[in-house]
Amino acid sequence: MIRKLLLALVALLPVLPAAAADSRSSGSVLAPQDSQYPEKIVLYTVEPNGKERLKTPVARYKDKDGRIVDLVGAVHLGNAAYYQKLNRAFARYDKVLYEMVDGEDLPEITRISRKVAAGTATPEEMQRFQQHIKNQQERGGAANLLGTYYAYMAEMMQLSLQSEVIDYGRTNLVYADMSMQEFSAAMEARGESWMTLVWDSVRDGSFSGSGGGLTSSSPESLRRQVSKMLAAQASSSRSEQRAIIVSRNERCFEVLDNLLQSDPEARRVAIFYGAMHLRDMHKRLLERGFELQGVQWVTAIAVN
Image (cartoon, rainbow, N blue to C red; front, side, top):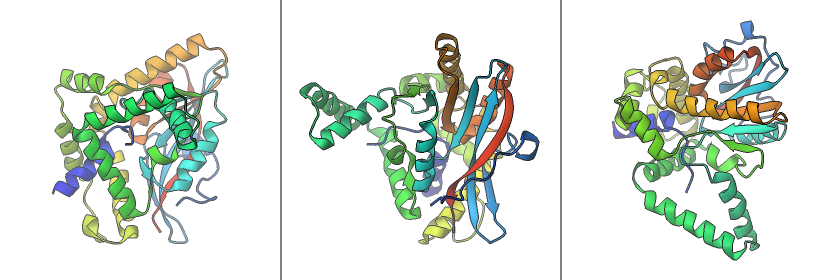
């Protein structure tokens, strides 16, 4: 039971700062009526050749002024090539709004850490980096537990961590999330707690299925179980009424609105958030006059 609860955390919780798809991983862009999106925000598919895949969407929207906003859905454990493909795509946007509770300084820290590794960091940068490490160690609690478990599950399933492969040092990244204090306050204001999120996942039936389950030692079996769980969970709307979705999406769209109003050069924008956020974000974009243009499904986890 404890292991199931921890896996629920992996599926549900926001990305926290961190202490294989192939070249055929995505198909052509589909018209909205043919894409299954936004009814589906995660797809578990079995291809004609028997290959099982977990796929996430990249949905394109355009407003009357020709500005583009792409919703890039993510899962936080996946094939390294999946995240590398996203890295290449992010270079083509003017701005990329990213999620990461307590991750406002992540781009700066990522760039400094590279200098530290190369031995080129200034004394001020070394001091900044050391203070960041100290702050991470002092956080403790659920954040460190979750980070450890993410790493454990990635190793067991022979997958990669989003937080380790995505290039958060990009200069076009824009922070669009909440601090841990703000997120906790938002949950409290709605009468929610961390365990509310976990039990939502359990009640949604995310842990049903066979194939060896979570006790299997086979990476392929674990990838299959987790992929099916994520697809099942994404079909439920229970957690979409929670602060983990609603409050954080409100913050993200405050950032988007400000960006579109203040920066005329921001013509192509990506919102890089967990796939569970996308149905609510879809509605928010329509309310702002954007229209869905098409959807591309990208393989996040190749099961076999």
